[in-house]
Length: 95
Image (tube, rainbow, N blue to C red):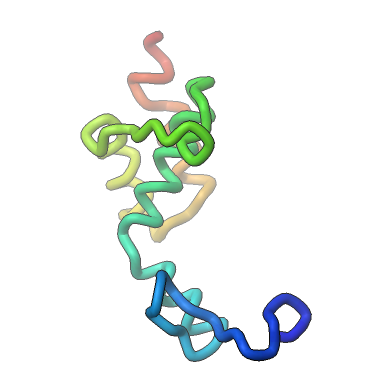
């Protein structure tokens, strides 16, 4: 761990929410529904040629990406399936 963390620092999920080790950190991140929503929103913006929401702080309304978000969660969080859902969405194929 000292390759990327100072010796006195531990892994944490969000401010003041520690994670015991890297597997626990991964589980905490995977359990947060906002992570999935952020991933889908960023993919949606990228596919439609929009700016990155992290760089510009422009949020994609949940209602806009709800179908892709549901598909992502329903398919076991498979990135390939999420990309397919975005590229075959009405917003992408009908503009």
